[in-house]
Image 1 (spheres, one colour):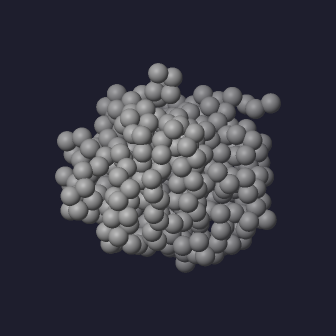
Image 2 (cartoon, one colour; image 1 turned 180 degrees about the vertical axis):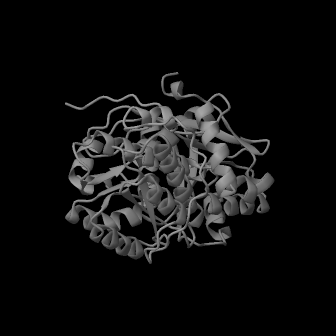
Image 3 (cartoon, one colour; image 1 turned 90 degrees about the horizontal axis):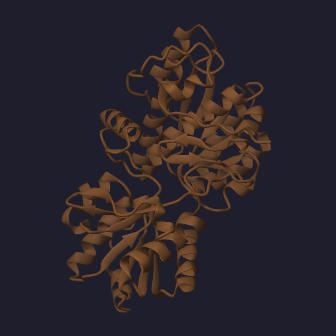
Amino acid sequence: MRKRIAVLLAVAMMASVTAGCSGAEAKAPSAGTETSGGQTGENASQEAGESGENPIRIGVAAPITGNSAEYGKGFQVATQMAAEVVNAAGGVKGRPIEMVVKDSKGDAKESADVARIFCEEEDIVAVIGDFSSSSCMASAPIYQEKGLVQISPSASHPDFAKMGDYMFGVVGRQDDEGPFMAKYMAKKYIGAESVGVIFMNNDWGVVTSENFKQACEESGVAVTATESFIEGEKDFNAVISKVRQTDPDALCLITQYNEAAIISKQVKQAGWDVQIMGAGAMYSDQLIQLGGADVEGLIAESPFIIEESDPKAMEFAEEFEKRAGFKPNIQAASAYDTALLVADAIGRAEEVSRSAVRDALAATDNFMGITGPITFTEDGDVHRKYRVMAIQDGKWVALTGYDYYDE
């Protein structure tokens, strides 16, 4: 029977599963950097050494360099913040935790190489990462063969967690997000009868667009055109022109924030007055900084948004921005929750071993993080609820609550 846990955040949360908690607030220095060469981050090593106990080591696979470096830095900063919270409360089973960060460069082959390195380091009990579904799915067979947990804060491909019983996904699945975008954002909120789609041609983009298109058909929303692009593309004028010719009521972007900013600018430069909507991956303050006035009014969805009514999320966001130099996106918030969740699972595990940590993670039921409750399905992933949000007056605002499903 699954053990039900209702866990508070930060020090209060970890006090319920750790030994010798001091209750002190975590305000340690910023996270150190580690590359795939294996050099341990300075702050993590200092904390572990000062404790007098051998640390419990958790790997972090992330794109520290490359096109997705902002997301990698978000992983690095957020997981180190979580480690400091846990260690300030006494650690786990009387031992500090240490985050060991390795750079996957946002590349599937590099991610597989990082997986092999982590698997050979016997004291690594779990790995948080990687960022993209493509990278996670490339490294999944390696982790599965060696019996090492790979728990991704951001991979949302519905087949990822199914690849093995050591795979877990935290952010939610695209076969939940895509239908929400179609039924509740395109049809219900915007009132669109037709939509054109521009999507990134990778594992995440393809499966998201397919789920979105299927849900549009089921909801009575006509998909007038679908155009793909390769990551790194800068000139979208040709695909914009093709979609515009089909005259949709809305334009759906299944992209990251940087491509969304470029496309929005080029849409406005072309003189096309169309409602732009898109996937939650665009939820980043960087979209506003890059897009400026051209992204004003853009609508997206997310299971998480930073609001003043949520003091825990606000506290996390303020500290994160101090360290990272930018506001957290959903991926960073999810990485923070994931790190705390892994620490919680280690605390609940019968012993500190890879298999015991896997079993404890699989039994997770209603873990309460800043991104909402987390309960794993039999496949090892999470069903999320989403909210409609928009950029208004240069900032993200929530347009609906989670009860929008029921209205």
